[in-house]
Image (cartoon, rainbow, N blue to C red):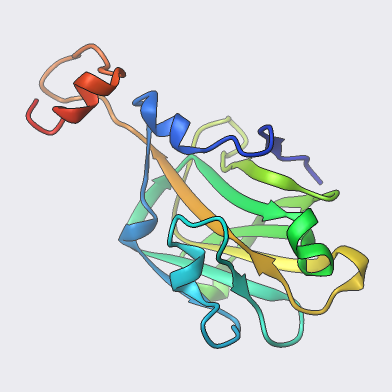
Length: 185
C-alpha cells in the first residue's frame, strides 16, 4: 500500500498545469460509473465545481472507469475528497488499476485515506518512475469511512506530461501573459 501525495486543503492541481509540464486529458476519455444516483453522475464528477459530486448507488466496490481511444501516457491522477462534508460517504480505501480493457486490469496503487480534505495527487508511474501508458484507468472504492455503503467523489483529474517540441527546445512560458498566447507559438 502506498500513501498518496496530498496537497494542503484547497490546493488546486491546476497549479501543475501552470508550470507547463503537464496538461489535463480527462476530456479525451470516455467516463463510466458502476452506479450513480440520478443527478449525481459523471457530469458532476467532471464539472470543476467542488460543491457537486458523484454519488454511487449500489454495492461495493464502486467503480470509475476512464477509457482512452488510443494508448495514452498518464502521469498523475488527482482526486478531490472532503471528509468534513461527506463523512461516511468519504472513501477510505481506493484501488487504482490500469490496463488495455476491463479484462486485463492490474492494480498499480492502493491508497488508505484517513479523513481526507482536499486534492489527493496519485502518481501513476511504472517501476522506473516513468509515466504509464494505458488505454484504461479504473478507480475502485473498496471501503468508506464509518463503514459507509455509498460513496461521494467530488472531482477527478487526469494529467499527462507535456512533450518537448519536435522543432526544437523553446523556453517554457509559465507566466499568465505568456500562457494566454501559447497556442500561437
